[in-house]
Image (spheres, rainbow, N blue to C red):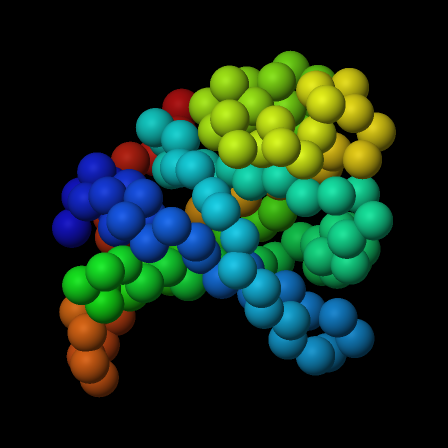
Length: 139
């Protein structure tokens, strides 16, 4: 499956369930994501959110997307919360819905989340095996 197909599944899904870990306990919540051309995922959250502390303590995450045809995509990756005002402004331009929550790239409450994928896999509906997606190496 191509990265373009993965992007289509993510867009069709609407939300992806982000899994983090807190003191050995898995924590999952739905979030809206955008996928960049190179496969990185971007989202946003409030500085006060528990998921910020969880990702600061353990940057390893997984996101699961299920589209309208029930095709699953799982992305295992590393979370980076260091995105500054430039990345926040780009996210606001790319996903205007983020503007409902934050006044701009300098909003102190605004945390930019970037996930660098380590593994991307997908499966058809049912009990099939997951298939790994081959990605082009970054530069």
